[in-house]
Length: 130
Image (cartoon, rainbow, N blue to C red):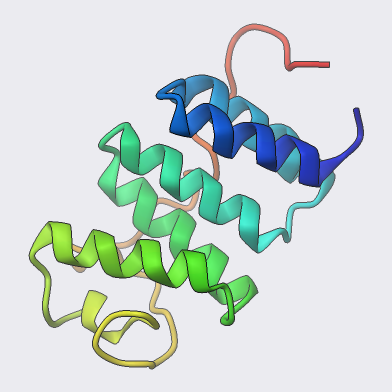
C-alpha cells in the first residue's frame, strides 16, 4: 500500500521483534513515499541500533532531528546511544537530547563524517514488499 505511516509502523514493529532487515525494508518503503518523515528516520536509527551499526544510527538520528527538532523519540534514542557509547562531550554532547541543545553537526560519535548513504541501509537484492 501507499501508506508511509503504515510502512513506518510495520518497520518499527519488525525491529521490536528482532527482524531488523525486514524492519529496514519497511522503512525504505515508508521513505520512498515520504522522504522527509522524521519518525521513519528515527525508526531506521532504532533498527540500525539493534543491528549494532552505530555510525549509521547516528546518521539516521541526525537526519530525524534535523527534519523535526521536536521529535522526542529521536532525541531520546540519540541520548541513549551517546550514553551507550560513553560519549559525554564532542559532537554527541552537542546534540539535542544529550548535554546541550546546539544544532546537529554532520559528524558521528567518532568525530568523522556521518555516512550519507545510511538512510535505511543498502536496498535488498530481492524485490520490495508490495
